[in-house]
Length: 260
Image (cartoon, rainbow, N blue to C red; front, side, top):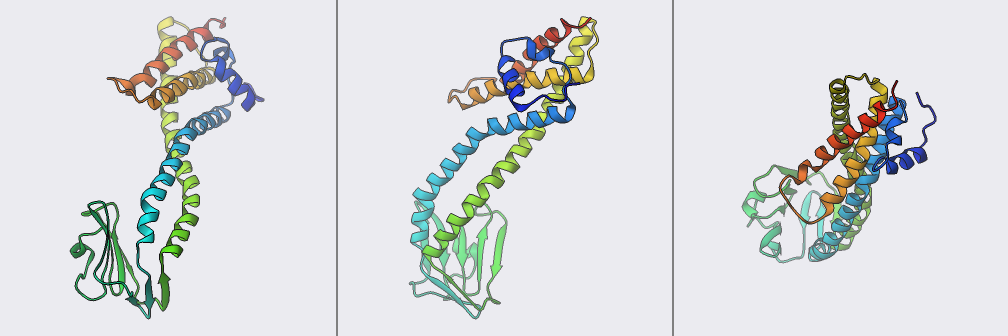
């Protein structure tokens, strides 16, 4: 079993796994290392999507969120009561969608009555989780001695929070994808044993796990490239599995060709 298979070795062999038989003949890499390398590959391939997501969020923030925030009135919470010099009910819309309503006069008394996505009343703030009809989050302000909410401080708060959320989203998303890739690699391992059986040859478990790892490399890379191409066709989602089956067949044959 190979103990000193480095990250450089993996990427070098990974490139060759597209077209050469040698990576599939390397032999057993320690299982812990196999899963680490799969996690590393998953993270690297998730980076373009992460960068695109960050770019999209920044664009949405710049073009939609910031202009909305700057239109908000200054609001103060004094001894549990919301006060504002803005004419009320104050309504803020984005296009034809009502986003926020402020009313401390009693004309509008609840989020449901406001018809908006978020509502500030005389002693509480409420908002829908994802849109009208979804669950409601309510924040009671009656115990707040003093708090001021103004457009600049809210924008600065958003600017501070977003950079903290980006890595969290990347970690959680990549972890979910990694778990799914583990299932796919174990399915490929089962396919490897099936290929060995129909050829009448015996394959070692840890050797075939390494074969499955290297069969995952071109399958994942090509799948990622195809998914980024803005052309849709029937069976696009099956490309990975067809590639994986093909590379597993080739990988198993390459591995068996050096077996006694």
